[in-house]
Image 1 (tube, helix red, strand yellow):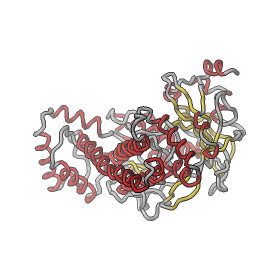
Image 2 (cartoon, one colour; image 1 turned 90 degrees about the horizontal axis):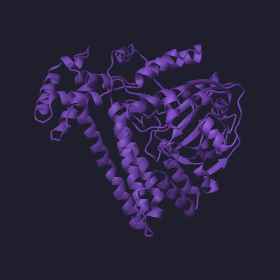
Image 3 (cartoon, helix red, strand yellow; image 1 turned 135 degrees about the horizontal axis):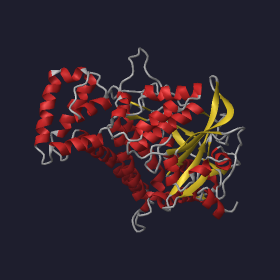
Length: 491
């Protein structure tokens, strides 16, 4: 099939500019076909925005592409090489179970990576089988789509297909492949790989490619590589603040899981917090709490410092000046993060302007929420609608005093009570993908091949700020359990 005909019939319009980088950055590979692929879920709206034909994707040929059984014209399958600090320890990594088909060029001439996750072994598999189980792939689909609906930069999922083959973990599980869509898969770990094992020319090629791909407006007459560092810092400050504002816990913030684009990437042991507690950890492998909810801003700063280290040879020929430039840039992260987070918290409380006392007002509320084990999402939802749900905190003198101060604060701004209410509705979601709801959807899908539970969940998560009656049921907390909730990487 000619490329023009394939574009017309299916919408695939692939290029692979990443393959233009030095060969050390990737390994080109053939696809590993699967036995009997079956479509489980297709993201129709995302497909349409990418310029793809939804009906064609559901055809035999379309399914073959999503399963890794057929290479669409213009694709150049490759596995990317990268390194990373995993729980603080540096190691060589790479795409151990994923292949980048290429970049889809959309009708708006935007460029998005199309990656098959769970597509088979690569030179970077490190003894793994390169395959993925259905449950973790559907989990990423659910959480990434929820994040997108919440307005948080994220990779997205185009489709999940089963392979007709089992993957062996603790038991036999149905195998699956997810098609991930990203602005790119360039990571902090990609730069660490170039810095450790590449040449100076390799590092410069990667930096120049990244600037062209993600920061094309950087002035050529400026210090382009300092601008790259500063822009990445700004994007991460925005991203991490948004995570904190909705109670999202990534679970494995290794440097290879920080995307240069500023998107959330690699949904492994992630989850959303119910009861507010900065020490909340869900990941079964995070035994020391390195990636706890309250630590995420600090870890982001640490990861960015590792990124800055890789750029030192490009920042300035004088090593001391390069270090000083990097340190100055990194020192801005904390202030940028705090600025984004405080602005978001003000909006969650219906506050439009800024006063010096706002910080204590916010911190006092969070302190009460922790003390009385209040649910994070539902507390702000209750404040938005002036509800007194069955929560101990709302009946305390402490809360009454805080509420009086809050109301007085709202009264000092020019905006009306109605405007504050609308701001809070836009800033406080009606629901999040509650862990027990996600687990119920995955159990029905994997054990009973019942995808209706997941489909209903995705439907209510698609408009989290609608505050519709249908969402009320999904905002309810799970039954109390004596065992803490744990998530797993699913690899």
